[in-house]
Image 1 (tube, rainbow, N blue to C red):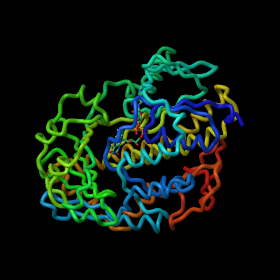
Image 2 (cartoon, rainbow, N blue to C red; image 1 turned 90 degrees about the vertical axis):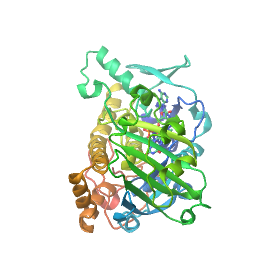
Image 3 (cartoon, rainbow, N blue to C red; image 1 turned 45 degrees about the vertical axis):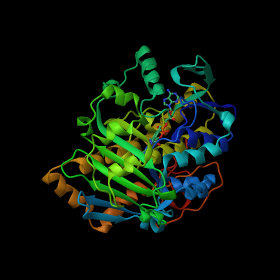
Image 4 (cartoon, rainbow, N blue to C red; image 1 turned 30 degrees about the vertical axis):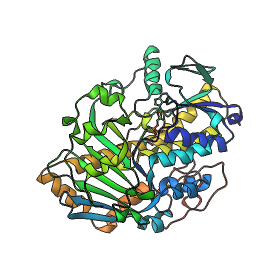
Amino acid sequence: MASEGLKVIIAGAGIGGLVLALMLEKASIDYIVLERASEFKPLGSSISLTAQVLRVFDQLGILEEVQAVSLPMSSLTYFKQDLTLMASWDATIATDRYGYTSLMFPRPDLMQVLLRQVPPHKIAWGKRVLSTMQNTNGVMVRCASGETFDGDILVGADGAYSAVRQSMYKNLEMKGIHVPPTDTAPLHFDQYCILGVTSDISEEYPVLKENDTQLNVVIADKKPYNVYCIPLKGGRVGWAICGKLLQEQFHDQENFRFSDYGAEAIEEIRDKIDDIPVPIGGSIGQLMDKTEDISRIMLEDRYAGRTVLIGDACHKLIPAGGQGAIQTILDCVCLANLLKELPSTEPADITAVFKRYYDIRAPHAKKAVAASSQLSNLMSSKGLLADMMRGFILKSPRWIINKSFDSIYGGRPILNYLEQIDLKGTVKDSSKPATLIDKPSKPSMSAAAL
Ligand SMILES: Cc1cc2nc3c(=O)[nH]c(=O)nc-3n(C[C@H](O)[C@H](O)[C@H](O)COP(=O)(O)OP(=O)(O)OC[C@H]3O[C@@H](n4cnc5c(N)ncnc54)[C@H](O)[C@@H]3O)c2cc1C
């Protein structure tokens, strides 16, 4: 198997880069992670993971560590601005149906768990990828530090503004290969999020001492944004303000672009957002006041599905949709399975692996991008029609909700090359095999599935 002599360069030590590194580590495939940041910074808000990826975490032996920094999710609840209940979906059914309870945790805590799994010498900090070059012998990455790194394969896990993706486009154009106009069109941002995690505030808000959590969404009255409030382990609260029209509050697009998940001054943001009440008590302004680092992001309403890109580098999902990290980890499972099967490092074999990866993952990623964008639009649109649509969807009968959840959460792929673990839950695994050969999926033995 050529995977033994393979050298993979991973650009970006975010969730995707670190998960892929861990999977390659377990596959005994050589790799190096190049990360732009000079050190780990605990930025971001809450992230949830569902059975879709908790099964592979179970197989990788990191489930318990992730559970230790998480709270189990009991419900997804929507409120009007006066905090009257609009609808509540029971999230505990995930345990019976898909075999794993959905978990909610601060992004920095998951990052710390992942960083403990990857040998420190395999992550090169302070290496901002500037450009890439490839030929029949391999790929070379040039960093802002002036250093270069050589490998057989480059995986762009460098997030929403991927330098690897931009470099790929440039190289393709130079070769006269047409890049779809949607991929090269000027950035068009229409989703904005401001987010953070408070310090331990459980003394002021006793509800935070409970052992489970809820994803609470407050649909703001006539405001171009909604408020998310999620109790987290350790008496903290993950919060976010997201909306399609937040650009009315923040129109400095250039700054937004460069402040992707960067730390922001609280005062500037605080002044521009209404003090909407939150279901744990108090208001969003009070949560902001208890938060040390606030991040803000803007997102495009399009995706770019390129074969050696994973995560946000090829499909940018709105944080509020809850699928960003999940779809990224699913990319990693698929790519790691295929790389382990790579017959040789010849360009034709590498292309075959990347093509297969694209064929398997693109439909799922496109579906997730469309669904999270639609959900976000629906939730942040204002007016009577939007209210009626929301009411119709949120109050759908349980069997309809289950059916649509099964199509999202039913796929629970694991790694082919590690010891197989049983499929838990009453719903069968709907994933397709991630192997080089197109095998029919066997739901009862769902090892190689996506
Ligand atoms: C600081 C931060 C906070 C976040 N907070 C949240 C949140 O609260 N909720 C949520 O749903 N999602 C959040 N996300 C996004 C979430 O992590 C991703 O949507 C998802 O996990 C996909 O992961 P990814 O690995 O593709 O991208 P990311 O997790 O965004 O990781 C990309 C990594 O690539 C690095 N990078 C970027 N450019 C270069 C370059 N040129 N060279 C080398 N490295 C580079 C970045 O520094 C980062 O470490 C956050 C991302 C970041 C970076």
